[in-house]
Length: 507
Image (cartoon, rainbow, N blue to C red; front, side, top):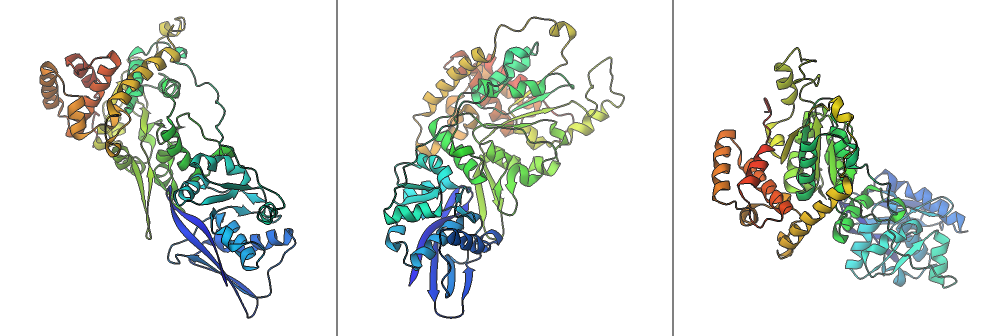
């Protein structure tokens, strides 16, 4: 007899069905797991043995073979423990094999029989719901699985609790979907004195989902401005929250299985490697750009990042997907982010300060800014200079306008975009102006005649690339939305062009 239990393997946030086949046959006692298991899967033998011992059972003196099918797909992770244990119990005729066939199973076993948390419960629940099956998962993640829809979920605290449930001596309660409690209030824009042009650019970036680069001397407030962006962004919708939670689930970052509507804000250190930013490693985990999906990726001290790591961001920023290539598979993670970057104008940071004049100008600035390639500069919609704050500015009273007032205006601009894009077919739908492209961009951002002439002249004089040209149109469309204007006019084009900053020697 061969007992079968269904589980999954993960390819990004997608799942591949895995058939766990358990066979007991006569012969010398042995236990073998085949089907390209990794170290964690191979070690499940001892965890399963300990868990069965904890509930008063032992491996029968037979030859036990566990096959993980399809056999040519590598199997990774500790979530195979529970399906292997249940398969053994079915083969020993302790549990009914026909009932187990109705579930997708995943979970790690402790030596005392406790079912502990694993990564990827939410994508597994989505896959189970798509095949009209239930899900068996750790009790701590039942609330996470409940977001997958109307499916039967057995959130088991221990192996013995599962056995008792199937025997009918006790019933596992159905878990409830959980939302994370509101976090601490983000810093307020009213904390920043002066920097009105930078605040304006930050509002434009938030309104249209645009990438933003801030250039200024140390202490000008670039990091403070970036930290206040989450406070003016609207909460995620249900679909966006589910996408983000699936990535966090695969990465094992969902605390207590609770979903959040707050947009992600990731700020990796400049020593981050390419796999850390884009994704990779032995198990092709999501990188920072995917963990920031539908949120903000803040890169402080941009030129200090490894050039190879920065260049690896070019494709995800353009396509909204991070592709991790492996010998046996290509793993794709969503990566639709709003990039916010900050940098000094030169290595010492005081390029334009007459009192602290840079002794190597302009070579210092040229060498420093050339660490960022022209194509990467081109993918940033808004370039804004953030000058040093004077003592007179610091002595001023706090601004009357804070994050709440700016967030209200951002929400109005986003509502206009939501209404505009809601009529699009599902496969062509976008969320913000920053994502509009091709014919859609031409339809929604066509400027008036004066604006078209200005844009054409500026494109020739500034030598804008096609990408830069389109990004000016996207920003101009956002500026029109912020005014409630139906059409893009010359003033919108003029302000959008003012945000195109040319690197001194980008290449």
